[in-house]
Length: 112
Length: 110
Picture 1 (tube, helix red, strand yellow):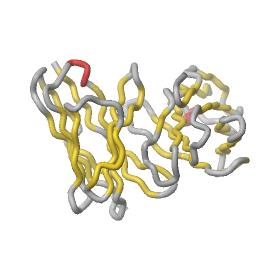
Picture 2 (picture 1 turned 90 degrees about the horizontal axis):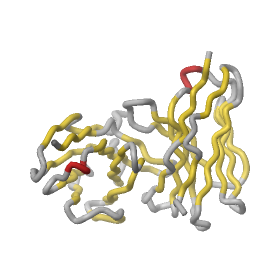
Picture 3 (picture 1 turned 135 degrees about the vertical axis):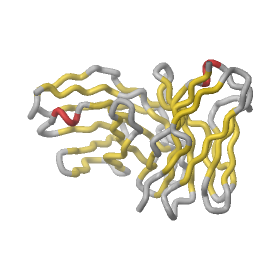
């Protein structure tokens, strides 16, 4: 079992729709969770982080964490073609431990 | 604040050679992590340095090594290059709330 699992996609949504990206992790003791966006040919860009169970909203993005289910998700509301990218879920085993474990990423395409 | 910088951006080497990559973290960030990214394996953690000490290490052979200087700049070295070492090498500097990546060094081994 991989430490961090994501559906590779591609996930395709129409412009204006909600895109839902999911991630599960195996280390139950994991403390912090991150979502990165990576455009083709570019490096990953941090878009959200979440530490506590529940929802965290930032603009059009909402991260959801359920530690009991070992599940993290990212919702993108009012999806735009510029959101088309690969989204990487990352899990940090401890608050001060930067040994991040990344999922393989989900490729999202937003169609105009 | 300036972001993470990496040099060089592109490198072409041949098998058996060695290579050194450099990373300058965001000012004030003391932790620097290195990753290898390939289409087949995704992002894989190499090692992390904090205050000039290797704090964590991923599952890579000893040909991959690194160091960190007192100004937090870090270098990564790969010796005896193999074709499979062709990848994007990413450096990230950290503070609470996530890691911030540099643009990467694209290494091609021929």
